[in-house]
Image (tube, rainbow, N blue to C red; front, side, top):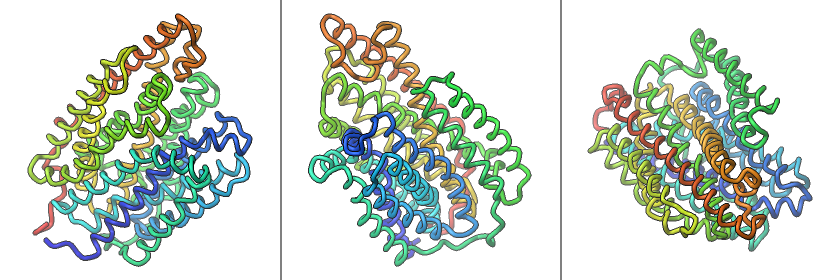
Length: 488
């Protein structure tokens, strides 16, 4: 069936928004030393410029997507773009570390409103079938390309115009997205009348996700036994139980828990979680190796990581077409299988290896992700009724930051414990990639301990990839998909 003319505009606006937000997530890390210098702040304290954004973003994704089903996806998306753009301008004008963190939290709220509705807008513009798969492939490619270009763009902006421009660059792009949303984006037709918003469920969802993400983010730095971390973890788990109990009884629930009776929906949620663990969860440790041990600059590191991100740009759009010929379960299994192989290849790293030993693994990791992610997002939308597309979009995106935080925490535990076993006196410096603090004969031991820990971490990541293969083949079923409209 020929798509409505507005469908292409919807895809363009949503893809540009994905580029804007993904660049912002990856670009700030590069500028932290410069920001700390100008604002006279401790670098570890400024980490909350990143953590504050992440916590707000992660906590509000599910609620944003679910509420958009009730009051309109275009309205939530547009309001999010306005808030994100205004907060970006304020971040660039920040006069103190506290102001920057506050404005970054506002950015996170706006970002959640945008990304929580993004896939639902695609689902509303493209009926299930070939066109939707192609659109999701383009959306994945846009986000993947932006993730890979983030360090490069950040490095160039900081070196040429200064750190404030990593935020100010968002303003013209945000205004362009806003113009597209106001002029070209159309509200998808509602299959059911607007219903009452589950305010209690929304509050519980935000509190639960905030607590869980805080524990996962703060745990590796403060220690899992720290009072704040333990309190957040216990509170998050208690809130999770309370949230589930409340949602079962609510007619207009933030999360329709009955959807988990559908094996493919449960499988899609698990795979979304595993996908993020296998990508952004391990990325910090690969960057530590490239920059800390091998001594590459942020710009040089970004160029080398293009070996991972360029395949996503090329393969992701093709994955949408392959999804029409190959069952989603097999395509995702193939993608996760390539991810597992990629990590097995990267596990060969040794103390004398240069970055090229990881090059084949980088390429396969990008190809595997590009094969797995687009059909995964398609399944997430296709197994739920259309009136629940915002809920599905928000829930799927919720597991992106959760998966990243879980991956960083789990891999960090493996990584640091392996180094600590070999270098009990210098484990903190070596695990942080600070090889300038190690000299003499200890340097070779440190390099061996670091690469041994990285190799072990890659083997654990490979196991996560194998788990993704199993979930894809066992839980994703064609009969769970919603019927495809005639001619789609």
